[in-house]
Length: 198
Image (cartoon, rainbow, N blue to C red; front, side, top):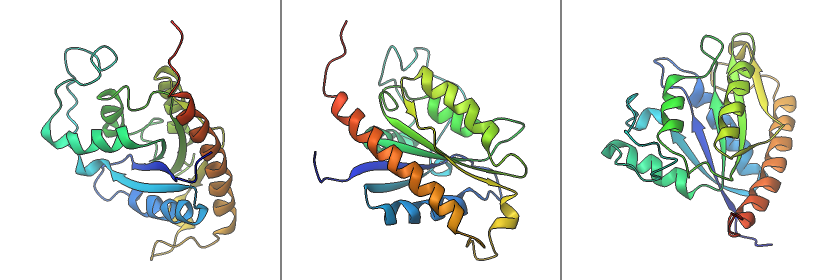
C-alpha cells in the first residue's frame, strides 16, 4: 500500500444557465479534502468543448480519436484520475446531455476505475440520473459504488451563501461514499497494472 493520495476527479455534469451544480460540487470537494484520501481535481464541463457529433470510429476501438482542441484538457484530466465523482441533476428523468457527450467521447479514461455520485434535483435528488449513469458506466467497465449523496429539493437545503442548513447527515453520507470509493479506487489502481487474460 502506498501513502500517495489517489487522484479523484469531481465532475460538474450540468452546463445549464443558472445551474446549481457548482455549489453542490464545492460542498463535496470540501468533504473530499477533509477525508484526506484523495488529491481532488474539480472539473467543470462548462469549460470543455463537447460537441454532440461523435468521431466515426468509437473510442472503444480507437482510444485516442481526433478530439476538438477545447476537449484536450478534459481528456488529460480524465486520464489522470484514479476515481470519479459525478455531480448531477436530473433533467426529464435522466442526466444532462453535456455529461453524455463527455462520457461518449472517452472510453479508456473510465475503464476499471471507481465512480461515485452526488445528485440533486427538485424531487428525486438526482437518483433518476444516477440510476441511468450506473448502467452506462457498467458498460464502460467502470465500477460504481453503492453509496451516494442525494439532495432532493436542494433549494431548501442550502442557504443563500451555498452552505447546508443541516450538514450532518449529508456529510456522513459523503464520508461513507468516499471511504468506499477509496477502497475500490486503490484496488482497481493495483488491478489495472495486471494484464487482463485473453
